[in-house]
Image (cartoon, rainbow, N blue to C red; front, side):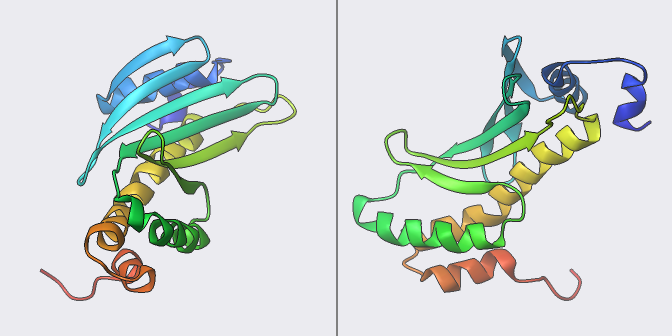
Length: 166
């Protein structure tokens, strides 16, 4: 059954939908308030902290997906260069680095102006896109920071297509 079939004829708050998706995937979550939820989503490389918050004022569902990263101070310029290159490849959302908190951050805002409702599929796709992007680019970030690779070489790891069969 499609996620949206469970919500037919119901006018649900976007965070209620996120909570249902978290339960469906058996993710750990904490409903911080009526308009905010935090989850932990296990990936191949990391466990990602994902927070979604609804702003009724600007009718936007904001998502922030974070993971810890502590690059040496002298690697920050190359990491920032890498972030620019990575963001050129991201169609939805963008990465940034919060140096004070030592967090790599993927952010996205789903704008639903005019009283639009977000579908469960939209929200699920938004969360999955964040995790997939973090998983895809995590090795490249590590190669730039710890492997002394250039951003161009490290990015090839993330965007190269796999060929053949195992």
